[in-house]
Image 1 (tube, helix red, strand yellow):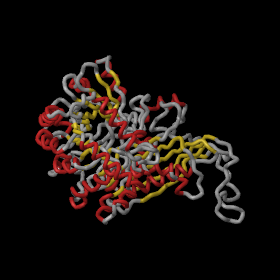
Image 2 (image 1 turned 90 degrees about the vertical axis):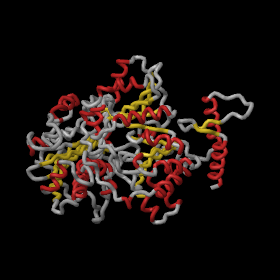
Image 3 (image 1 turned 60 degrees about the vertical axis):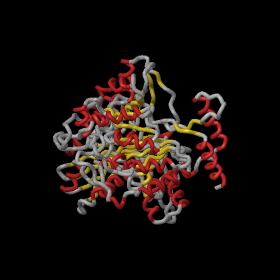
Length: 620
């Protein structure tokens, strides 16, 4: 506590002799008669002083991989006055009851706690944060927190011009404005509302008030706005803008399709063709953007590569949702309710323990569903396309497996017939999902349609005794220390009979809980990796590949699940595949149980296994 008090005293002393520029970075005022130092020298001196005198970073905000979380995003509301196509469905999303949302005092109490522990940047988000009536007051009260250096806001810009003078006086120091097109008619198409000129007015108001840079976020979508890439870059010639091009990412309700995504590499190539002199800027610590600048231009550009080159290793961000849940990863499903503990009267120490436990559980990187290799062709993603056929609201497309077959032939990986071909036929409505956890050296061997080798073979000769019991009949773990390491592959399946109503909602992605197929797929991948923790006598296996596919069978109103696992080691991966399929099925039940209680889980079985001393197996 004494060290923390000393830290706070030092911060107050520094703040007393500083002023803030438009970016929020403190700059020391020269004493009378003292020559003014160059800004870079002054900033360097302050950083050196802080390094020498600041106390160690809070253990509660440091995860198990050593990442220090100094940046907090707080959602002020779930509501939004736009309906952007990549963000939410046209009809909006179900809103949390007002009583379950954080109050202003709760927001400030949590912010105060996080800042005490080392958070020095807070960004206000939504929904749309500027539709909250007391947003100016919240900014003003956050500005009073000792140690908070930056208060930012991410906004769609509709209300920005009107509120920005007040927000600046209150202490707002950084602005991100979302704008995906420079064509008014296209703007209305993308956001399903009018307001283009209000957004442009907001951008110019920010420049007028001295914000530098003004960050403009542009989600690039193939067939929609990738043709405006160079127009956005040209804006930086005469304006102090930092235009950040964001790879199109999947979120609930946005009908994500890999064909819409324009990768960072493709965007960069286009810009360099027009401006070969484009220079890469040094990367800031924990930055999510790869920054570039054209010599002579006033502003700069950046690329946020969430899909093609994740930046999980330097992530320093935490998020608090509008209903008070702490999320340590944007792509993770894990949340901890700080609101409930706050309302139950938890002390600061208790809240810190809860926060510290959540941060400590943060994964090394976000879900494999969203990862892809930059050197792979654009179609080769860690998530397959939806590959829908006559699904409501989506155009028919060629089967993903047909498009990708040549890559698998090149990799020498045998392919089993698609479940869709076996049961559904090409004219049936279907959605396909496939996720990968891969460590193969060939990046082009990433295909959502791969199946584990399943060569027919003779029936296994059963063992004359159970292998998991000792001579006295007690449970025992098999000793595999003397077995050779071999390539092991197993494929398992499960079927979930949903019934007509639940099936229709899943097919159209209309469940209130979200996209059941995506959630079940992620659960299957996670379950495969945790099998040894769920099944007591299973050995821990380091998996090199996990694939979970879910397909809709309209004839039975069912979801057919197929899980494939691969590893090299002394023991098989049948249990990993079976656990993956079973947990994916259970997750589907959980997602749909509010709609129907007649859901049946069945046909959980091993389809094939290869490798090992007992030979290969194929379910006929």
